[in-house]
Image (cartoon, rainbow over all chains, first blue to last red):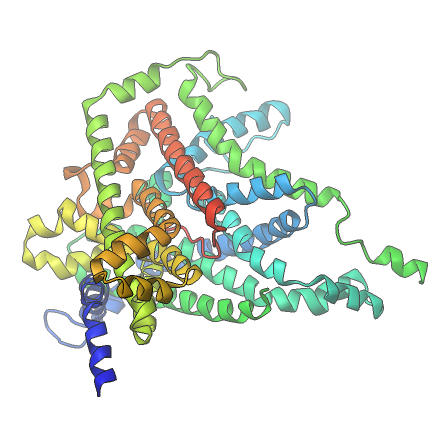
Length: 283
Length: 281
């Protein structure tokens, strides 16, 4: 009885935090979910979802999913390989500097990053000039930085380093003895990787993909600065609906937001699950 | 040992070309855009040749002399600092109390601190507007609401470092020792717990500061032109004056680097935990 009372008094001190969370996370999200299923005429309808699936908006989902899948798979591939190269590098200075750099870069983003890519790969950008004058490669007009391909390059700026950081704990979990044991039993390097290392790294790689996918799907500032309203992405469309630029149609915005939240929830929950699996091998 | 096998299996740490090339590519990818933007902000003409035709401070002078620049900088600094202070004030006592007294509440607290990862900025802005617009435009479209929204996206970044700092000290023993000496809860928290978990509070605070300093989405959708923050100012400039915009971008890079150096310094003092490094864009 007494213990029970003490627990209750313990919860009282948490009221400010829970009030904050309920008022600014739970209630707003639930409100969006519920009003996505309502309209002026009906208290339960899929009309908003039908409008959210109109060709223009459906294409925005397709574009966002394609962009996220592209930057997540390239990010996992390049970031994973670079992460391994850094992890297995003999030079301590190189390891520390690249990891510190990855730490900063993964938190870069938004307007300054987009602008730096215009300076670098725009039609008169530095790299564009170097490529055309020294290597005879003209990027323009086949490539444009203000396009989906340009966005992929800009997103990789924060996706690659994020993967480099995410894979490190799992790489450190790969024990030297396992490789030695495999080799003593007659395995080749390829067999070691295919049968031992990759299965152990798999949760971290899949989790990394999901997290990078979510990271890209929810991004708005970089895309908006780089391409403005020209590129049809989910976040750009929701932002336009919020600002009332297109038409005053909160129901459609709610439906689009709900679908986005569902996609994000799958990614974040999947990441959490793989993360706990990956941790089994951590030292 | 079979000599053939010896060649088939590479020694663990043989220096190799692919490793060198990958790391070089990675470093170039991360550094070239930054260096190019920095050089661009000091160059007087740079669209015809590989190297700029001359150096100048004109763009930096022009952009910093505007009155709107000072206002944007002041707005962003006050936004970042107030978000940082309020988040730390909200999360520190909560994390401490959960750790010490109500472990049962931990999953719920963690859920609320992980949730913001799954909410895209545009969706958070939409959800807040849909919830609070009914109370009038000067509540929802105000800098005050922007601080609250920034606190939401800051939660994961403040909570994690504080929790790992709490895990690294014996909070129960410290609390009981202080209680035996007759200290009240406020004194315990302020004089005993906070100094002991300071590295966690500092890393969390620095992360929030750098996050909010470049926050564009919420600022753009919640307050927009009425309360111009630094990133909003920067985006406006990219549309009409690239030179001055590049100076502003370099300033953002400097802020990001300074906070990162601060983080490395703090982490070096406690052996930081950087398992979760998830940017919010």
